[in-house]
Picture (cartoon, rainbow, N blue to C red):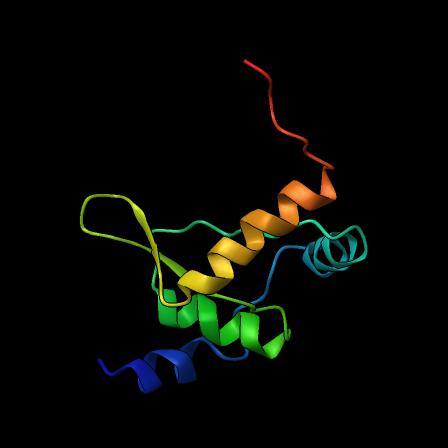
Length: 93
């Protein structure tokens, strides 16, 4: 079955859990990164997140169950944002 056929079948019957839109808003407001981890069909997840305008970057699992990204600079930026948000000053040894 083609990707477009799968998406056609899922449109109209697929929805996020109640409150998911509130979670997205909360994370945006408080500058928390929202990270979804799934071993599911990444193109399906991307399709529905794009409809919510919630997709910033897409991480996917690699062959060795590691996280890889098509947007490495965004991952680095995300880590920097998290450190700045938490006002991380480093640890003394």
